Image (cartoon, rainbow, N blue to C red; front, side):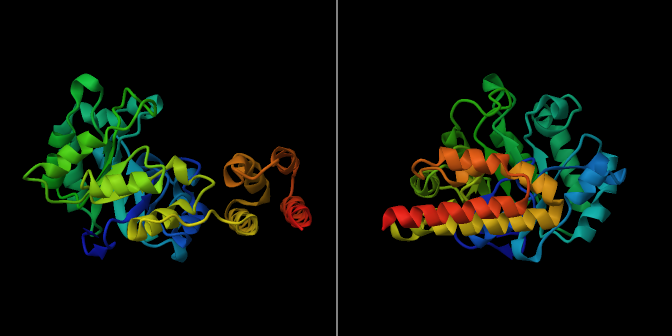
Length: 328
């Protein structure tokens, strides 16, 4: 599969953009474990043209995470076009436009999923952005505004006509937010349309290797985008790839591998955000990283109370030693 001239191989796996999750250290980690392309947190183009620190910081890219797409959102075409120079200076491989965020504060400004109410406006914005950048442009969107207004096939064809090189489709409507089940059949109908030529990538509920295989083999889609199922589980990409290639499951990561991954990730976050923020944010993810580890709760309670990187490393070292002794 190609996005412009970027060759991502057969049935690539993508890390989805997730606010407060898809930062450079996490993207680097997912690339290491098999993601074929990663996408940044979504970035406000209004913030970029105002030089807002939070928006500018999200442009950071590590060499180890390439290929990477910078995802942008906005409601004002002039602001979106004005932000392109800054985005290109950051050096991404792709620009992705967010036409799917369902959050009220984004939608109420006419950005994100609000575009689903006006596919003509979406097409006009996309066409102008494509015209004003040298980078390949993709879009990420949803099935429609609500169950009564599912217009994804029209939207996809308009995006193709506007010059988008691929479309990522979350299999829910805006009104569903993140509830209910993703409708992969609706995404497959887009791919099956006789005029559809650009890659169609599925997003939503792709939680297991078997589901990734369904997306490829039954629904005939070009790739899979993994979001929340990668949080605390960067190994999901390697596990999916192995299953897609062999039909067999990789063994789960060992406790030692989990500990070493958490330590390296924390080191990277400390370097990028500083120790205080890194330690606070890590607390949200311990339960996911160590899911399935017997009797982990007391260790998790210690970890969430730790206030420094060294404290966390010490607790993790004790956890390993404890497990080693109890396995002897």
